[in-house]
Amino acid sequence: MKKELPERFRSYKNVWVFIEIEHGEIHPVSLELLGEGRKLADKLGVELAGVLIGGERAPLAEASTEVWEHGADAVYIATHAALEHYRNDPYSRVLTDMVNEFKPEILLLGATVLGRDLAGSVATTLLTGLTADCTELAIDDDRCLAATRPTFGGSLLCTIYTLNTRPQMATVRPRVMSMPPRQPGRKGRTVPFRVSLREDDIVTKVLRFLPDRDSNKAQLAYADIVVAGGLGLKSPENMQHVRALASVLGGDWGGSRPLVQKGWMPADRQIGQTGKTIRPKLYIAAGISGAIQHRVGVEGADLIVAINTDPQAPIFDFAHVGVVADAIELLPALTEAFRKRLAVNRLAG
Amino acid sequence: MHIVVCIKQVPDSAQIRVHPVTNTIMRQGVPTIINPYDLFAVEEALRLRDKFGGEVTVLTMGPPMAEDSLRKALGFGANRAVLLTDRFFAGSDTLATSYALSQAVKKIGETWGEAQIVFTGKQTIDGDTAQVGPGIARRLGLNQLTYVSAIHDLDLAGGTIRVSRRAEGGVQELTTKLPALITMLEGTNEIRRGTVQDVLRASRAEVTVWNAAQAGIADVTNCGLRGSPTVVKRVFAPQARAVKADQIEVKDRKPEAVAADLIEKIFATQPALEAELVRTAAQY
Ligand SMILES: Cc1cc2nc3c(=O)[nH]c(=O)nc-3n(C[C@H](O)[C@H](O)[C@H](O)COP(=O)(O)OP(=O)(O)OC[C@H]3O[C@@H](n4cnc5c(N)ncnc54)[C@H](O)[C@@H]3O)c2cc1C
Ligand SMILES: Cc1cc2nc3c(=O)[nH]c(=O)nc-3n(C[C@H](O)[C@H](O)[C@H](O)COP(=O)(O)OP(=O)(O)OC[C@H]3O[C@@H](n4cnc5c(N)ncnc54)[C@H](O)[C@@H]3O)c2cc1C
Image (cartoon, rainbow over all chains, first blue to last red; front, side, top):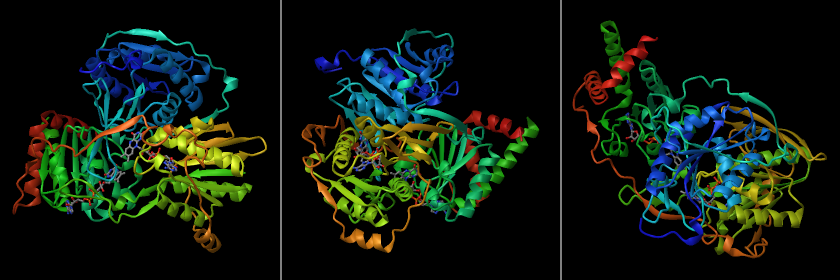
C-alpha cells in the first residue's frame, strides 16, 4: 500500500457484508460475497464481518455460524420485532445507524430485489457512493475499492471508485462471485446492536406475502448444466433443440436477450448482465455472439462450449471449447450422441 | 391529486453498435428513446389521474434535446412537462441525480401543488443501477415502494395506498402513507396511444425549462461531477482468455462425427462430469 489515508477516513475500518435472510434462510449471494469480502479484508489487513438484521424469531444463531464458517471474523446483530419482514424504512434506518456507529470502510450487498431496495436508501442517507452490479472487486494501491462493471451498449468494462466519502458501497448479483468453501467449526465474534425502533413510527405495514408458485422448479441461476440459444438459431422453433439437449443432460436452458425481446422465450430465461448470472459446470452456447453483457453472465462457468458459424465471433475469445458449425444441425446430433453415451454408461455402470 | 413521473432519455440500446476494431461505442445516428421501463410508470400515473382526477407532471434531467422525451409523454396525455437542464448537472452519478431531481420535485410541488405520488421506472437501460428512485425517496422523506406490480387502493382522503410489490421469492402486499415514491415493475400495463388532441397539444405545448437556480438549487456543489462520490477511473475492453477456444475440427465432416468429438473433449476437460451426468440421467 502506497498512500496514507486522509485523516477523516482513518476511523473507517473493516469490510462488511449485509447478510440477506429470507424465510429463515441466508440468500446464497450473501455467502458468495463473504468469499469476496474475505479477499478484500485480507488485502487490507482488516476484519470481515456479516451484518444480520431480523425479527426476534429469526434464526440468527444458526445464521451466525454459517457466516463465520464462510469466512467472517465477526457478526453484527440487530433484532427487533419491527424487523420481522423486510421493509425499507426500518431496515435502512438500522443499517445506517450500524454503519454510523461502527464505520466499516466497505459495505457489500447482493444486487437482489431486497438488496437494491436497501442499498440505494442507505447510500443516499450516508451521502456516499454506490456502485451497482459489479463483476469484479479489488483493492488498489491507495487502499481504495476498485469496483468493475460492464458499461452500457458496448463491449467495454469500467472501473468505478468512491474517492471522497466512506463507506465505499457496492452491490453484486447472485452467482457473479464463487461460493467460498465452508469451514466447519470456524468461529467468530458476535457484536449485538441496540435497536431503537417503535412499530408505531413505521407507517408501512406488510399485509400479506404470497410465495411464488414455481419456486421449487429448477433455478436457472443455480443449475449445474445450462444450454442456451441466441439469434443464430434463426427461428423460435429451433429453441426446441436447446431444450432437448438441456433435458438429456438434466440441466436447464436459457438464451440471449434478443430472444426475450422477440418473444421467443420468457424474460426469466435471459442470461447475462440484465438477466441471470450463471456458474454451471458446463455451459453450451449455440448461436450466441458473446457480447459483453452476455459474457459477464456466463464467465463463471467451469467449461464454456460455443457453437457459432462465425470463426471471428467474440464468444470464442472466452469459450474453452469452440465449434465453428451450424448449431441448428449440430444440436440435434449432440443431443442424440449424449443420449446414447449416457445410456450405454448407465447399463455398464 | 398531483403525480410527478421521472423519465430518462436514453440511447436506444438495441441499435448501439460497438466498433469491431477500436472497441468504442458507435453512437452516431443512434436514436434516443424514453427509458422503456419508465413507460410503465407514465401509464400507471395516467390511469390514476383518469380515475381520481388531478394532474400528471413529467420531469426529466438531461441535455436540451431531452425535451423530445417530454413531448412524447405529453402526447400520451401528461398535463405538464419540466426539463431540468444545466451544465452543472453534467457527469452526475446516482447520488447527484437524485439530489437534482428531488430539488426539482420540491419546486414542482411549490409551483403547482404538492405531489402525493412520485413515480420512477424500475431502472434504466443505460446506467441500469435502480438507485435513483430510492435516492429521491430518501431525500424527500417519501415512503418507498419499489418493484410495484399493482396498485390496489388509493385513499386520498385518508392519505393511504395499498400495493403489491415483487419481493424475493414472492409478492408482498403493503400499505403505506402518502406521499410515496413508487418504482413501477415492467410488464404491469401497456402504454396508451395518446388521443389526437393530446398529440396535437404536445407538439405545441410549452415545456418548462429550469436551470439549477430556477429549480431552487442554491448550492451546485451537490450536482454533477462535483456532487458525485463515484468516479469512473478506467474504461477498458475485456481481456480475451490467454488461450483461445480449443476448436473442434469440422471441415467436411458430418454433424454426428463433430458431436462425438465434442463430447470426448467435454469429458476429457471435465472428467467428473460424465459420472455425474450418468447419475442424474439414472434418476429419470
Ligand atoms: C444495457 C444492455 C443490457 C444487455 N443485457 C444483455 C443480457 O443480459 N444478456 C444478453 O444476452 N444480451 C444482453 N444485451 C444485448 C447484447 O449486447 C447483444 O446484443 C446480445 O447478447 C446478442 O445476442 P445474440 O448473441 O443472440 O445475437 P447476435 O449478436 O446477433 O449473434 C448471433 C450469432 O449467431 C451466429 N450464427 C448465425 N447463424 C448461426 C447458426 N446457424 N449456427 C450457429 N451460429 C450462428 C452469428 O455468427 C452470431 O455470432 C444487452 C445490451 C444492452 C445495451
Ligand atoms: C455504464 C454506466 C454505469 C454507471 N454506474 C453507476 C454506478 O455504479 N453508480 C452510480 O452512482 N452511478 C452510475 N452511473 C451513473 C448513472 O447512470 C447516472 O447517475 C444516471 O443519471 C442515473 O442512473 P441510472 O441511469 O442508473 O438510473 P436508475 O437508477 O436505473 O433509474 C431509475 C429511475 O430513475 C429515474 N431517472 C433516472 N435518471 C433520471 C433522469 N436523468 N431524469 C429523470 N428521471 C431519471 C427514471 O424513472 C428511472 O427509471 C453509471 C452510468 C453509466 C452510463
